[in-house]
Image (cartoon, rainbow, N blue to C red; front, top):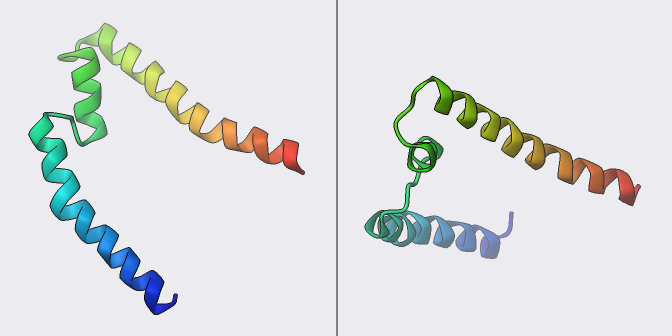
Length: 75
């Protein structure tokens, strides 16, 4: 890693820690995925747990399968 890339990496980390996270918290946007699920589905009961689990499975499968299909098409 060159010095320029190292400086850019550290600069991005500093910006992310000290500027972006406080702004996100100030706007009231949930930061963790657990908070996003509570924000979307409310307090959990059995039906909402099933819906949240299906949503999570769909999200993870999309994250995994879309790049995999594009990789196969490019080969």
